[in-house]
Image (cartoon, rainbow, N blue to C red; front, side, top):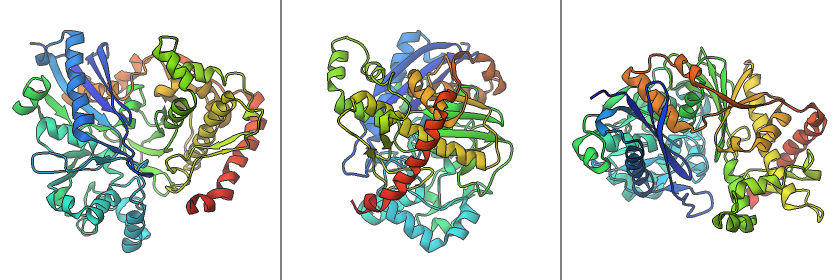
Amino acid sequence: MDKKYLLGFDCGTYESKGVICDHNGNIQATAISKHVLKVPKPGYAEHDPINDWWFDFKKIVKELLDKSGISPNEIACIGISTIMAAITPVDENCNPLRNAILYGIDTRCKKQAEELNEQIGNEKMIEISGANCNVESFGPKIKWIRDNEPEIYEKTKHFTIASGFLTAKLTGKFCVDKYSAMRAQPMLDYKSMTWNDELCEYVCPKEMLPEIVNTTDIIGTVTKHASEETGLAEGTPVIAGTTDAGAEAVSVGVVEPGDTMLMYGSTAFMIHLTDTFLENTGLWSGHYVLEDIFTITSGMATTGSLTRWIRDNFAKDLLKREENGEGNAYTALFSEAENIPAGSNGIIVLPYFSGERMPIQDPQAKGVFFGLNLSHTRGHVVKAALEGIGYGICQNLDMIRKAGVELNNIMAVGGGTKSRLWVQTVSDICGIRQTVPKITIGASYGDAILAGLGVGIIKSPKDVKKWIEVDYITEPNSDHREVYEKYKKYYAQLYQSTKNIMHML
């Protein structure tokens, strides 16, 4: 039987998505499964690896095969991406020993990050590991488990991340790709892309860590047990997989040095591709999901999650109408902001509802609605939230520019691109041109492409560019420039003026 189809699966903060496409990128079927972000305490963010990730994977695989009518034996390769990190301790049989501790929106390990930076020294850690520790890093999250849940730590055979957990469930092999491993401070030696014996001693033995490989490396095949659980054919190749942002970038043709992706998801994430490894930029530098290409990346902690929070807490009427078949709640909510002027009549929002990643790297930062008065409406609040996210994106893009690169080809992706208002607002604030592709399935589509590259039925990443069709393009509106130049300064000043109080709360 001709194995010409590729299966991609991506697990995000609130939902998982899957796709089957052929070797020319033509989509045969898609599927979605929702799950819940667990927030047991302020500053905590967790998923259940079995009931969220593995359940979603099995459900989506079944739906894809049923919808497409494709036989499991026709699947040439499987690619998987997930949210970043999501540190998961497992036993020798890949059974999770606790819920996964998620990426930077889970800030519980701030103390451990500070301790590791102090014990090792920032200069030494940056020299060996490429960056110091923060709440994004693998090491502090593992150390938090060791410090606070020693009984879990003692039972742990492997520490894995979300993508590595799923590929291990399929193949029995524990791996992490180079792109994801760049956040594995302090254990990583980023120059050799191996685990550093000395620095591992501060966290856990390197034998507990996954093997570091390339994203498109075939790490194994679907085992008999996994085949019985998932309905996939035993022996189907599985690539190492990666983090969602890298797969999403590939999905829209961000495959060559000079390309940039701006992802509008639960968080905002920016990837710029380079042909050399750039150091000392203040950004996250690393290997890309494609060999011999490097990245500088940056990200915010709460973007789409903030619009969801506003919808769920302040637009229950619109959710009720959606349940009754009277239109999409997000569409209705954003329409209320359509005619709100630039600057939202004096409201500034700091979107630090889960702390903040770049540029301030402050896990104790708090969300702020500033400047409200009785004339403001829900539409003003929504527009101000989009603008606050835009000001943060602008700060991140300015850091990328300061690294000496030009942002000429920005592909905007993610669920937020369904709102032209949001994308246009960011273009106006940042002074950038953004291209939104027609196919915005996202990371799962990128996973399928990466799987095709891994197994060799897609010959070149550049082939992907031929598949991209443009939906719309936003150009900055110069009429709003003067207002936003002022408000960007106010945004930065507001954080500086309130951060001490934020930290005391």
